[in-house]
Length: 463
Image (cartoon, rainbow, N blue to C red):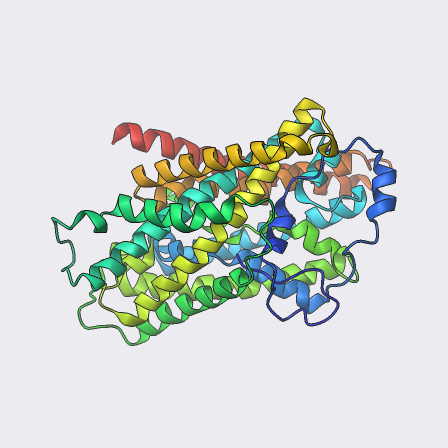
């Protein structure tokens, strides 16, 4: 989910030197008592209208690509093979792109510049609060997934360094998964998460970009020139049931979710027009689709139904090219966790101050104490959950359901509310068509979210 700086007058294709840029796309708006018109007058010229169309495409692509890439081969297996997986992605892409366009339209209509501000302005207070809670929960779940990914990759790397055979038992205490995850988290992630600003993470975007593309290249190469010891499981050619196809949706939603950061990207363009934005997001999603399809198809055909939810775990530990990919993923995740935590912490802080009715400038004295406490609680909870939830597939399923809310539910609600407020200005046929499409988006998103939540609850109970 790396991305380049939005506020740059030139060189939009260069990598960002400020990883905090990505965090600023997500963070909660300040709680301010000043009237909106005054705040707009004071901030109207800040960081707006500097990103070219090509630069915006690059930003959206890199906001979309990330650790979810590792789960696409398993999603193809769940869906029932290559044909079902490709068809599902192509069908969902229509709704994903339309959601991005709807958000840009509502942002322009409401004159708001972040995802949650648009939802607040268009849908009202209750939906706005639900949106912020969803963002906080999504970032929390993603942080858990990041820690699980670290443990998964470290297990393989340590096995190579210790020269232990696959599946060996009786490993020394310092090679235990719980110890290695905890040590890495306390040494690297916690110190990076406590500071108020995270702009010092200079190369986070570079590592994420290189890691993502390298993993994709390795998976494709390993499919074309497979190792002799790798034998695929059953290659499914059709889905077992419609439920199986729907079970692959959360992974696709998690992979393509860039909607929360899309509103600031749209407002940073030199020509923030909905028509131009439609071309931007279409091009960006096609590029992301190519990467995800390459990884999903080649990873699935390499291992078949035996593919692991984290595809890198399916490769032998001794493979050095794959070991480099694991190292890239670990470095990328180590820098991404503090950024996602910063986003979630900012939303929690905004909700707290809004609940207290307290402007930010009047509460600076207690900000540091609150920030340290919030960081420690967040860090310890995510670490404990990651230690006792070894299967990343379960976490991806849950946060994928939340991603469906950002892709379908909130954009659908915004479209419905926007059109209801424009009833007199819109032709009846057009009004009904757009409202019906908004209802379709909300229904689809609610279905995916409800299904993943039910699966997470009932599967664990039955187990």
